[in-house]
Amino acid sequence: MSLIEVKDVTMRFGGLAAVADVSFVLNKGEILGLIGPNGAGKTTLFNVINGFYHPTKGDVYLKGKRVTNLRPHVLCKMGVARTFQVVRPLQRMSTLDNVIASAFIRTKSKADAEKVSLEALQFTGLSDDINVLSKGLPLGKRKRLEIARALATQPEIILLDEAFAGLNPTEINEQIEIVKKIRTDRGITILIIEHHMKVIMAVSDRIVVLNHGEKIAEGTPSEIGHNPVVIEAYLGEEHNA
Amino acid sequence: MKKHLPLIIFASLCVVPFMELSSYVMHILILVLMWSVIGMAWNILGGYTGQVSFGHAAFFGFGAYTSGLLYYHLEISAWWGIPACVVILTALSLIVGYICLRLRGAYFALATLALGEICRVTAENLVDFTQGNMGIMIRERTWVEKTWYFYVILFIAAGTYVLIKIVMESKLGYYFVAIREDQDAAESLGIDTTLYKTISLCLSGVLTGIAGAFFMNYMGYIDPGVVFPLYDISITTVMVVMVGGAATYWGPIVGAVIMVFLAEEIRSLPYIGAAHMTIFGVILISIILFLPNGIVGDFRKLLKPFKSKKAASS
Image (cartoon, rainbow over all chains, first blue to last red; front, top):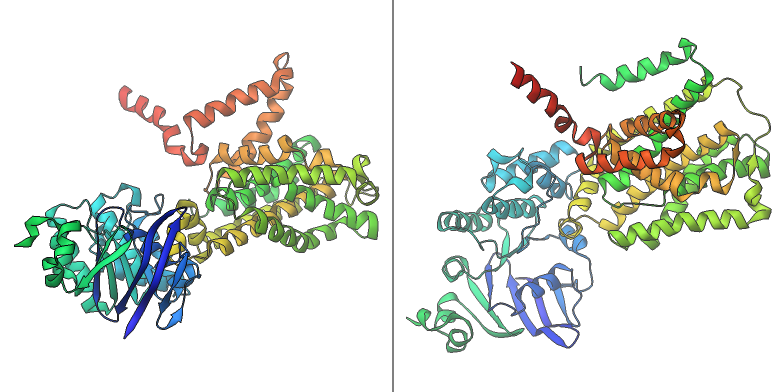
């Protein structure tokens, strides 16, 4: 069953088409990778799905319902959460308060919100940092805080925008476990943007490749790894083995 | 002890009128409480929600004029202005919010700056309705003594404090702060930023308006230059909160105490009293430079020199 369907989406900024006629489907329960060189339009596509941008042309459907011109908070209420590439914690709030603020969307009382938040923080391994001001967290933990915040909104789908960038190898392995756990433990569908090929190959069921705003390939990780168009545009020769 | 501090302060203020203080001191205390209310109201929007307004005179003046016009046109007690301004100020806040809250940061501040001035010029020129610069005078004051005015504003201030405390510990409070810290992130976390900014503005506007309505009743005379001025109301409001500490419960109250007392003290100094604005400016600049989070926000920093001296001597 398709959860999100992106249909012929074009997003123009002035004369530049950041995304051109891209269509793909995100099925329930899968992890779909979105890769491509810098400036390929990955984040723009996220912003279209998430409601920050309204596409110039084309539509986005959530469970068969057209959601193209809805605002982000409405989409969040419908079950679409996201993280940001450049982490955006609510700086002068503690880690716990950051998550509580997002948990309120589906909880009435503060006690409930706190319960959901503590759970999300434990899930992402931040239990020891709940009282730290979020601007004081190191990058690795801030990336996890982004995920905890998204989880606290109790979504059906999470859009992860480079949740691995800037992490060291140990942190990357921890993060891979968290992403996998999001699906297995919580049954949440994931759309993920990533540059680390090792990560994307390890976690995704399918991969969509963008280049200059256009979709150039779609398939399983091994298909993508051997696709000559993708190798030329993005992967380079070393992955050809 | 710290938990009961607000109650202790409230209780001790309750007995102040029995101390038979001079009417001048009572006047100063009433002004301090009134400025606390305005400061706390501004703090909701400017401190917690991060939408800095330079136009709170508009809300203050609207409250005062609501009260005054009810008395002048309908010949009912000006005290009806307090309940009436809940309705009027909510309406004004919704209109202002619809227009201004789509702007961010400095642009919002500039729009509110214009708002205060628009209100002043309008009130000056609608002579048939507002009496223009002749102002509105309440001929029969409710009380001659200050005691009851003091109690009225004390209860308004206590109510405002409690209300803010409740709001800030609820979902609303979390949403306000989330909007201040990062509007886009807040939006993507499911917070309807437009709606919650409007709620914040309504709360802030209504409370400021109530202070304005009280001002009408207490002073007995208003004109556009008294209740809508840019410096005396709008800027002073921002300063009260900045000096005391934005986004703190006690900041606006401490700020009000300092600003009102300081203004009075400096003005009464011999010789240099005439330059009170200059001295005031210098003090403010130093506070902003050395205590950017205000006196309450940077309280620890303020204690530091004393502590390190003690440590050195021992």
